[in-house]
Amino acid sequence: MGALLEVRDLTTRFRVGRRVFINAADHVGFTLDEGETLAIVGESGSGKSVTALSVMGLVPNPPGRIEHGEILFRGEDLLKLTPRRMRGVRGNKIGMIFQEPMSSLNPVFTIGSQIAEAILTHNDVSRAEARSRAIELLKQVEIPDPERRVKTYPHQMSGGMRQRVMICMALASSPDILIADEPTTALDVTIQAQILELIRSLARERNTAVLFITHDLGVVAGIARRAIVMYAGRIVEMGPVKELFAKPLHPYTRGLLRAIPKLATPRGQPLYTIPGIVPDLSRLPLGCAFVTRCPDREAICGKGKPPLRTLGDGRQCACFLAEGGV
Ligand SMILES: Nc1ncnc2c1ncn2[C@@H]1O[C@H](COP(=O)(O)OP(=O)(O)OP(=O)(O)O)[C@@H](O)[C@H]1O
Ligand SMILES: [Mg+2]
Image (tube, rainbow, N blue to C red; front, side, top):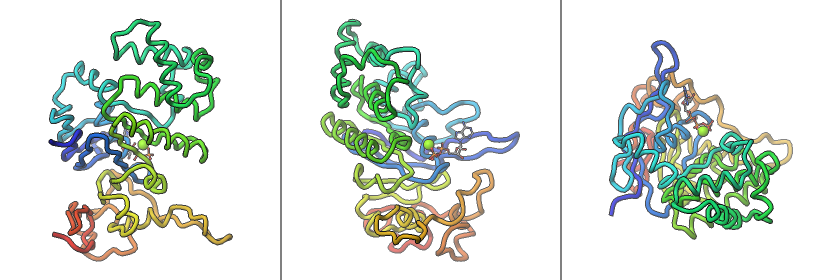
C-alpha cells in the first residue's frame, strides 16, 4: 500500500515585489505513513509553514500560488480537488494546530461552543450530543474540570490550556493526519513538554499520523522517528532521527545540532549559534543556498544547486560533499 500522504516535487511561490517571486517551498517531496510522526525542522523562514499550508490548501492567493507538484492523500491529488471537496478534507481528514492558538480561537464565544461547533461541522449529531462530546474531548486533552471549563472564554485560559483546546478542535473529526505547526513555541518549557507528550499519546491511541513542525531540533528526538531538515525552501536532509543525531550528513544539520542548548555548557561560554542569517529568498546565492554560512564550503558549492541524493544508508542529503552518494 502507498503512503497516507505523499508530497511530490512541491513548489509554492510568492510574489513579493513587482517582478520579484520567491519559492518558499522549492521542489519539496516526502511521504507520511499511516500513524507515523514525521518532523519538519528548520530556522525561521525555511518554508515549514508554507509546506503545511500547501497540504491544507490554505496558501493565500495572491500573493502565493502552488506552481508545481502533487499532494497525494490516499493516492488522490488534493491539488485537483474543487474548493468544496478540499474543505471536506481539511478539518475532516487533515486537522491542523497553529503556533498561536489565540489567533485561531474566537474571543467572543465560550470554548465549549467553539469545540461543539467543530464537532457539529464534521458529525451528524444534536447540539446536546456535541456539547457532551466537547466535554469528553476536553477530558482527553487533560483539561481539569471540563464541565466548568466549557463555559469559559479563551482569554480566561492560560496559553497551555488554549493549545489543549486547539488540539481538541483539531481532533474533533478524528482526522487521519494532524499537522502541528510549532504548537509549543509560545509556551514555557514545562508546559511545552506536557503538550508534546499529549500530542504523542493521542496520536498513538488514535493511530493519527502527525506532521510536526518545529525550529527546535531538540524536541524532534522526543516526538518523531523520521525528520526532514529544511533550508531556504528546500529539503537539505531527510532520514531517521536517530541517524540524523548520530551522524548528521548536511553541514546545516550539524549546525542545528550544535545549536541545541546543552546542560553541560560551561558557565560564561556562549551558546553556539550558526553564524550568519538565512539568506533573502529573492537573492539566493547561485549554488547551494547554505554556501554563505557553510564552514565546509568548497568551490563547487557556489556553482550549482546540490540535488537531494539518496546516500548509501537510505538517507537523503542535498550536499555535494556528503559521502556515500549513489
Ligand atoms: N503570505 C506571504 N507573502 C509573502 N511571502 C510569504 C508569505 N508567507 C510566507 N512567505 C515567505 O515564505 C518564506 C517561508 O515562510 P514560512 O512561513 O514557511 O517559514 P517557516 O519555516 O514556517 O518559519 P517560522 O519558523 O518563522 O514559522 C519566507 O521567506 C516568508 O517570508
Ligand atoms: Mg512557520
